[in-house]
Structure formats: structure tokens, C-alpha cells
Image (cartoon, rainbow, N blue to C red):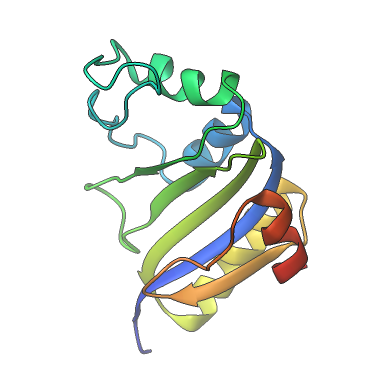
Length: 144
């Protein structure tokens, strides 16, 4: 079976939510590596370093009209090299992604599982690079 490198499955998840991000993380890469605390910064202070990952992600969830994408990895016990992405769009929507190195069959299984847990039929699979879209509404229009 041929391994396809950098398959990117993206699914519309609705309104931005930490609960949704945690659901995807814990489903696909439990025990994931925490983000570096300087991964992102608040809009008003580029020198501020968040104290916890939760503070960082919550800032972007609670603050309207910001765009931020987070990626989590897991380096042990992750044979398909799944990386979870959460793209928070400036219209306060959330697009979740799985980037992986796996077979065509397993990629399709992961894509369908992601759509199932997000209760969404809006999604796209790309290779190497994530899909192109302006915001959450544009994602819905392009990939419905």
C-alpha cells in the first residue's frame, strides 16, 4: 500500500470553540504535545507571552474578528504522523484539519471520522498545502 505524504483533510466545524478543538485533539492524537507559549500573541501586545496553552487558545476563541491557526503534533505512538490543525477565521468560524502520512483508505477513514465527530458534511482533502479560502463563510461556499 502506497503512503501518501501530507494529506490534508479539512472540515468546517461551525462557531469557534475550545470544546470542539479538544474533541478533535483527544480523538485523533490523545497525549498531544502542548503548544509553545510564544506560538501566538495577543493583537494588542506582540511582546506578551501567554502563561498557558489554554490562555492562548482561549484568547483567540473569546476575541472576535481575529484569524489564527494552531497546529498540534504528537511524536510518539502516532504511526500516521497525524497533526491536528484549528483554523480560527476572522468571521469567528472554525475549520479543523488533520494532516497525515497514510494510505488512501486510511486517509478517507480519517476524513469521514472528522466529518462525523464535527457533525459536518462540508470539507475538502488536499495534498501538501491546506485548501485556499478567505474565512469560514468562504470555506462553506467552496467546499459544501
